Length: 403
Ligand SMILES: Cc1ncc(COP(=O)(O)O)c(C=O)c1O
Image 1 (cartoon, rainbow, N blue to C red):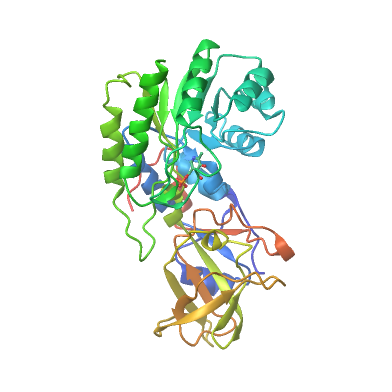
Image 2 (spheres, rainbow, N blue to C red):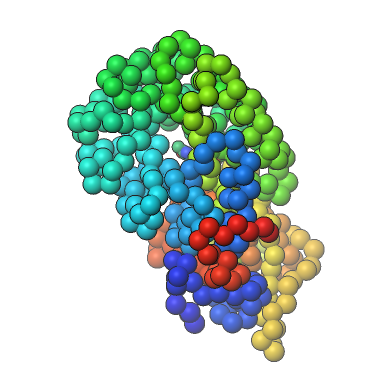
């Protein structure tokens, strides 16, 4: 490789286009192209329009090349799910806050989170987790978010099978939190890549009913993530329709003006701001072998229920060193990753320009969500190279930018 890998914005090498990257570096390992300006514009739009307070869900993409633009655009609150994520946020952004929104944690995590990192916000969906929080922290200066079991019928990825308290448990948890002197709050997740804003209306109505029945004063309603990214071929309503649905249930009397509203978007903020450059390493008929695959950046595309199309462009280097975009009509390819494992195969064929050959590059767009976050190092192929597209000046703290 002719370049030094970089994961942090201060170390990024900067280019003005994918062609510029290919011509200069000829990358032969999978490489993420981060467009900080695009991420900042998304954040600016979300912060302006969401009728509450916005946390970023670190799990979606924890690369510092992605976190730095989020921070620069004004994100100061982060949804985290492990001590490693807490440490990342509290160390890199000392003025930011972390909220542990995964409803259970390994033994000892609550104690360390509370004592060493000053965390005061935790999600729960069982009495066992609630007791663990009180036992390990020995404290009550906490806000505890009861995670509700809501339907995930309109989402590509169902998150309710693993998490969420039923109505009776939720009421009991809220009452117990209040009785012990901590602050009760509510949270839910409608499922990731949720394609119907009505899912938020239904979950909001459930929050309303549970709040009434529990008869406790709720500090915060956190509507989670799930805001979609407009992948090609999908039917994604505009974000404003989600915000309107959320604003409507926020108006209900039971919440009162003092109740805070939070959201924890991941995908909607970062998916479109990152693309992935891969290289063809082998072609056998319509079987195409790339240097990234099912154990790497494409793991989410292979999950149950996933129907994700990425925008694609293909490029070839000509004899004079210049880069040409291949614009032949698409053909269906079965795509394999680079590992020595037959399961390293992407579900469903992918339409890519006909005539691809070893050495060509394919840029997959909208790859910022659940890509490097999931990628394993199986066979030594973890994609770990990040390049900046744009200008480092775009990252000035507090910059408000438009695409
Ligand atoms: C608790 C929690 N909050 C927020 C998110 C972010 O969701 P999304 O990327 O769909 O916005 C997730 C993702 O699974 C999550 O588990």
